[in-house]
Image 1: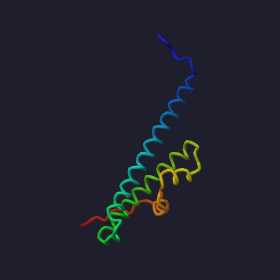
Image 2: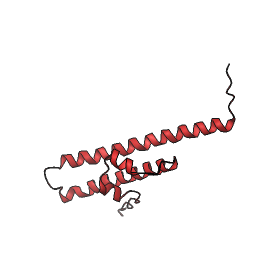
Image 3: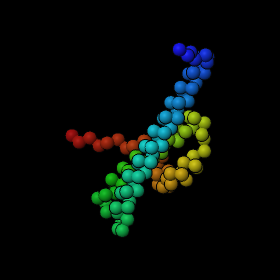
Image 4: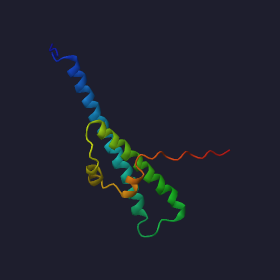
Length: 112
């Protein structure tokens, strides 16, 4: 039976770093998925101007992508990766998504 002789603080640090990496991966995949949905929507409506009836759906996709981008940027910064330009280039994040990054979604309207 082998016994880990590292100090407990080293073991804890290792597990924290593992969780940070895992969270970073989850946030990156979430960003990829939201951007893919936005691109699919735009591709489906590329040949014509998006009708007014579909504008709310597109705004929702942009908002979701902005939220995913915000979560990813915050997670990266928590791990010490401060430069977000790499994310914007690598994931080809549209400017409109970048502009709404971190904005809280509008509260849903309740019907009485």
